[in-house]
Image (cartoon, rainbow, N blue to C red; front, side):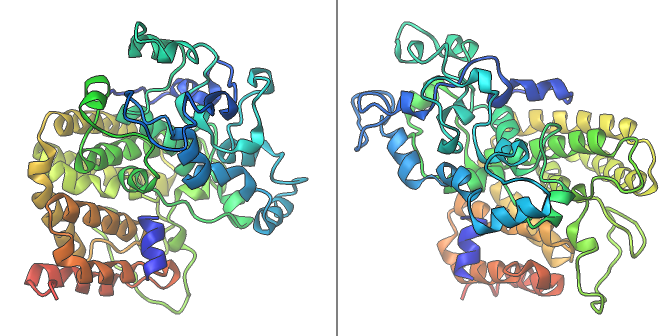
Length: 429
């Protein structure tokens, strides 16, 4: 349980159109100079954090010693990756763009500086943008942050941009996706939540007064809520781009894996109100939408009815092969409104309400799908921390993580039973 728990844990709007992908560092115009250009001890390579400047200056050392992104490329040299590459008919994984797009800073060859090394994996510029035009200016006090952003610095503090960057690999984008073919070859199922996985990264910055004066900094609850809305938007983009005009077999990675991959003798199908599709249906993976329900109820209650109706219609249109564009547009408008509602409210005061709503959903059996339960457990952990009650519910939280320890044997009834303990007051042991 502990390993699984460690693994799971381990405000600008942007366009829905494909053009938004071009803003990501991998596709930008600026050249990438390589992590060696950031590694000097007087820049970001200090062995110890410093307090004399606005940054810690040990960012390179934190990344090189602690950050799993550094090992993204070396993963492609593993026996598992070699097997996946063989199954896909590739010469190898470490030279294939389909793998390098998410396991390295795979910019075009012509945009690689003399010190750039693809072997560095997900390095500084993969997230912060090609440093060609800002390498010298970003340390100049006379140059504003907006000017540096214009010069190619990627604004990772802005939730929409951070989400677009992280989701491009951890959910998929129009340009790159862990397709059903790739997963069929052996690639693990993707699991991601913006706030939780962000918190788990070894911090190479401190959110203090100076940081907040220069950048956006929100609480975990606000980051989670906005991240869930952006995940919904990204899912809509994928549905529109990958399922429109589909062939006999659509891009199956967008559907719920466990709708097909389960033991045939298990009879645990239940009608779900948000879907209303018959047994045997290959269901759209709606994990990018499910957490929106408690967010809407607390932050934007007037949007609840339309959100439920439109998501149900999206499921039905995808299932029937119908045109999804109209319902996608309605949902995008709803999610834009939700972004505004979350951004304009004091999120932390709503933490207990969101927590109670999530637990109530779980206790009533609304998390039938494993991916939904997984997201709910991560959210509940964060919410308990936000309300200052995590230590009080530690044993109960262990039981929650136990309920999602093995996805192939996930039992929604057990999860509902654990959730009910919280509501009945039997969760504090």
